[in-house]
Amino acid sequence: MNILLCLDKFKFSLTANEACAALSKGILSKNDRLNVVSHPMADGGEGSLELVKEILNLKSISVHTLDPLGRKIKAAYTTSDDTAFIELACASGLSLLKKQERNPMLSSTLGTGLMIKDAIENGYKKIFLFVGGSATNDGGIGIAKALGFDFLSEDKSSLDPIGMNLAKIHTVINTKTSDISSLDLTVLHDVSNPMHGPDGAAFTYAQQKGASQEDIISLDEGLKNYASILNRNLNYDIGSISGIGAAGAVSASLLALLNAEMKDGFEVLAEITNLEEKIKNSSLVITGEGKVDASSFQGKLVGKVISLCKKYKVPCGIVAGNIQELKINNETIAFSKSLQSRAIDVNDSIESAEKYLVEIGLEISEEFLV
Image (cartoon, rainbow, N blue to C red; front, side, top):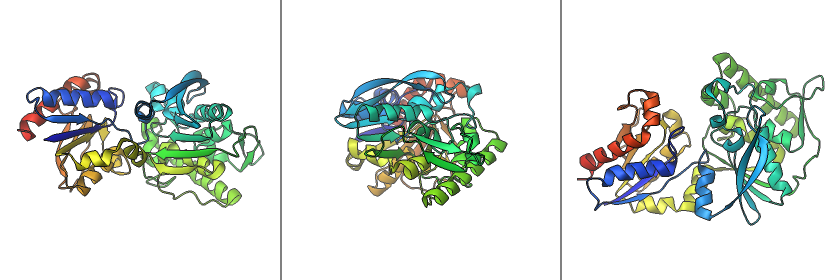
């Protein structure tokens, strides 16, 4: 029996590699004759850069930049030939902030923009940007600011590139401080949400980034305003594009101002790692991540893996830190198991994730692989 473990990271707990290793240990603990293949994955969110670095044997470049609240930090991107791979979460990620610091009204992607600027100045013509795991809801104006764009209010005042100022933008100007004429930028996203509206960036993701309900409404209105400004100034109708809601609608600025191309992060990484062929040749696939909920089926890894399993009629199990009640009517799903169902509390499930994954692996072996 060929068992493929295709897990994403368990946020704040285990990397995808570590999660696969723990689950594999449990599965093989009572039956070492099983053929268990670990295939750690990502979908354009956090962990994507490390995955690509390992697969393509890339080198790292460290750079001075800013965190989501404008504090000085060091972060790294990876390179190969004329291509740079940058992960937004390295400079603008939620994991860089303490819980009490999270506030998408005040956070910015400026630090990620400084990393892109560094790559351009070092001669890298092609840039792949992984955009998941952000602490921001700024429509990408932070990145655009770092690359020479300015955002003005109705009274011509320059605005800080933060979420709360999206509603104040009246004019966008290019100050031409960076040569982006030959930039080939590809944004790898991990969701299918539009820019604004009930399924948009703010209403879907801003709460987990620290926004109150009042903030969420304000951020959504800000994104609507910014979309209308881009449409008016550039004749670019960007608001309803699928996937543009990823990472606080960061791609809005990247597509409209930087002529970027947007691709599905999972599909690019699946192609690089030959995932589809491995699923096709498996007897059972197990996927999962820290949290599985409705958004997991809106372009994220778990939903994508299940779709591939359905395509090849391969049963698929879900293992996650937390599985919210889902109405899944899919004969492909063989089982679902969560760490929180056996943990004392949320903190215990995070701190003892490795132990619980080993236990779940043993259960799977005894219940489904006899």
